[in-house]
Length: 224
Ligand code: IYR
Image 1 (cartoon, rainbow, N blue to C red):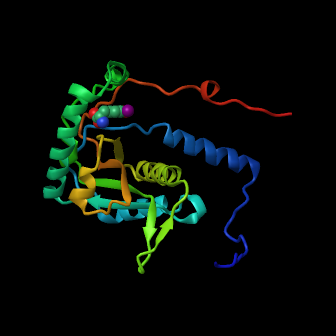
Image 2 (cartoon, rainbow, N blue to C red; image 1 turned 120 degrees about the vertical axis):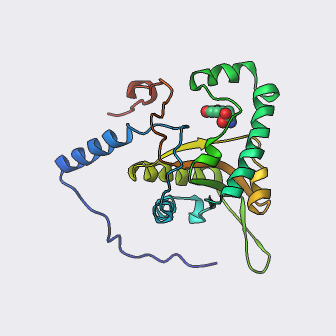
C-alpha cells in the first residue's frame, strides 16, 4: 500500500468575477459552434495537434486516478480501409436487422446509413479503448474503477480540444466494435469505447438541422 502524499495546490488561479463571466461566455460561444460532422476533407492534419489534444484528454479525472483509457491513432490508409470495411459490415447488420424501428426512427433526423466513407477520407481515426483492468509486468491485474465514466470524461475533453484547434470530429460507434481489438491488436481487457473520426470538414459540408435543449429543459437547481 502506498501512503497518501500531498503537495501544495500551486497552479490554481483566481480570476476577478467579471473575468470569470467573460471567460465562461467566451468558452460557451466557442463550444456552442461545435457540430458533429460526417462530411470530411482528406486534408492532412499534423500529428502534433492530435498529440496535444490527447494530452488534454489525459488530464481528465478518473476513478482512483487509474486513467483507464488507451487511444489508438490511425493515419494509415490501409488500416483505415480495414476499419471501414469491418464497420460497414456491422452497420449493414444494424440498419437491416439489429436496430429496432424505434431506434431507426430516432436516427432519422441525422440521415445516417450504412455508408461510412469518412472512415477513409478523414486523416485521423482515434479509437478510444476502455481498460477494465491493467496488467502489471508480473502478470497481476490492477482493477479499474468507473472506467466508463472516466473514459467518457477523457473523450469529452478530447472532443473539446479538437474543436478548440479548429478541427471537427464525429463520435462514431459501429456496434459491436470488437473488430477494433483485432485490427489494432489490443488485448481483450480493453473494450472499444468509440471511434473518433477527426480532420477538416469537406468544402460545403452539411450537418443535420437539429438544435440543443435550452438550459431550463435539462437543469434544475435546489438552493436556499
Ligand atoms: N452506428 C450507426 C447508428 C447510429 C447510432 C446512433 I445512437 C447515432 O447517434 C448515430 C448513428 C451509424 O453510425 O450510422
